[in-house]
Length: 265
Image (cartoon, one colour):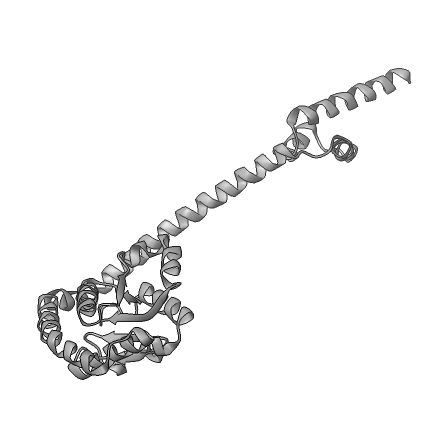
């Protein structure tokens, strides 16, 4: 039975790794799967997440103060909710209270890293195995055997990541935020200008590849000549819209015809 473990951030990652190895000891039939990349690389592997969810039975989202609002956690939570029933998706509140959680994460069943809650979580996983699940008496005995290991290692993770958590939870100086916004705005402006140039180039190439039909071009050029537009202005007007040689040819032929008509007079 595959158990999908979602995480983001160092504390969440360490707890997910602990949960993965501990679950394999308590219920050997489980196959925990941990997303190995954090939010910054998430956009590169949406398809991989979807593939893993195809045969996932239960999803556990390892939530912390640091990651509860991160887009990647919300994405994986949404993917789990879409592929599984809400009764088979739960959040492990590592350093949070239920009041700290907002929708859509608030809709899932919450589990705390305490003995009674973790036993209920294990029972849920065991029930998902159906006939392959352990007898409840055996399950409780195995749980009692391995619970002290989880409890001590979990406490160590919380202690080791306290300094990092405090650093990350400090509000950023307003100057830093404004600087980042300015840099992002400049970068966005540069990208937009680059896209505009690319669009202009593509349009020019498209016109070169698909020029105006010659009869239509000739009609437009002669009409402009009739209205007194100079040859230079006509060439500028059709620049990028039609081959310059074709425009000059029409103007040259028109001048010859005009001269010929004057000679006849």
